[in-house]
Image 1 (spheres, rainbow, N blue to C red):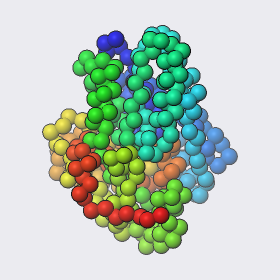
Image 2: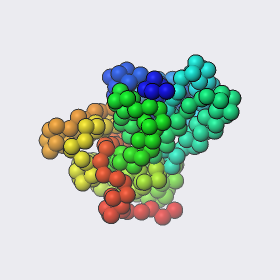
Image 3: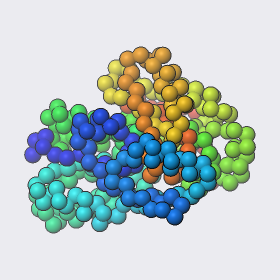
Length: 304
């Protein structure tokens, strides 16, 4: 059906607002709860709203999110399928959420109900700005004339070239997610220990290092980036932060000092992901070497 198709993702994605408009990226809504209030998020939140969200987390107000159900996906996609539109949906990593499986189920149901439906579900194996980069690339591919199926295949084949390096400020959020033990969270927080994590080839979080203090943690992110970055690739570098512009801009300066030609975009981490990581996280995300090639890097594993 040529290049006349829609690109969808969900609101856990962090993406440059200009690219969002340029490529007409559509969103599947999600919900999050903050204290006693429930928010139905149809578009990325404003920076003011995200600042308020993270301030409330700093004040120990609890938060959680809800999964997108297959029925939710069906309801979002069906009006476009009825119009004969093809679409690609770029999901949050299947290693972090069940949204990919729910989207697949909805797509299969739609194909049963609409014989000519063309729906491509792509497991990003990524999160936040990684999904944003894939959305940008999907838009570029569509502009170059790739059809829906070709574009989806390209995204699947290259998803593991999106590398994520990030450090977390508050270990209590990782404890809630089962990533560190309660004892590690308490001791690490007291000693100002910053875990450095990545997303592995299967789309799961992996603890690869730990540093004391922000300065060393940011240097660790930059070092991992330098080892895996391909400066000859046209795609952008994303820095996604949870209301921590100071560290995000410091990291951007480090990158541009060494790679002045890099296109570095700083975004605020969506509440959908921030609910699970806490405030002040900084993530450095880029297209580069295959994650498989990076398995030789030293890894600090947590045994649960």
